[in-house]
Length: 410
Image (cartoon, rainbow, N blue to C red; front, side):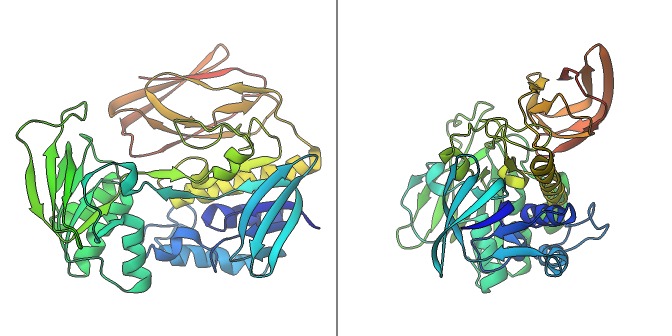
């Protein structure tokens, strides 16, 4: 049975960053990746905007991935491609059962870093009335067809949901000659980044319809039209607001879900707010020491730079855990008020003297928001001109050892 100090599941931006940090810390790492090359979703994201924080450059997704891959190939990091993890068991160590073209094997490790990313919500999860003809795609699938396979998903497209991938595909399909008839969002605020609303929709005269949803699909062999309805603030359909729009393609950009089935098999509780695990400031599971989670498997990030940053933290802390056998039995919960959509990490290790990076989203739009941070009897305030749920915020706090922490957003 082959043994590693750290096994990293997932070779996307978080997994590659974690592996490099593990290597730099002097530990032996293995990356397990189910696809035939490293990079994850980056390989199909040919638009720029990646690496602005990490490399001070505006890179495309493949360029960002290539920078990491070029560093990794010169390091003592093992990689298993086209390999699936089918089971993880824990006793004193972790035993990971994998399958690939060489058969089934079991690997042994003291720590596991989950960088498994996220997947898109499907049409079956949003229950639109009507048949299921051809021409209905998730935004990521449409992106793969267009950018990797060289196929156009359709000519007259409707996009449901204003998530970033949907916005980027609205622009991409327009550039390839398709007509994007509109982006429809059930919420009364966009779900994607403000810059993507401006650069992908407004710059190309693509209309955005807030408080609208698709209520029926027409067509049997191929989608022929959709029924659009307005909704009120409670997402209830507004009478007499239905409208039929002819189209040959429906693209869904209706949310991302962290892929954590392997964690659930281990009995780890999933935070319903993030759809990821509960972790402390080391990004270590608060339930099973030795498991670290990073990137979009922990919560859905809006910048790949933050994904890589969390991978670096997880890699460093995994090595510290091996060397010092740190435990997380002195974790305290970070109390937040109802105006937070979520915060990560949800717990802090009372023994930690490191600066702590928090990622959070507000539950609603705020103008001139104030964040009050309570560290025992000390209060620190931070002001924001604007907070919207679509845009993640990063917060760094120092000197919290042996302190209770709570936050109020108002």
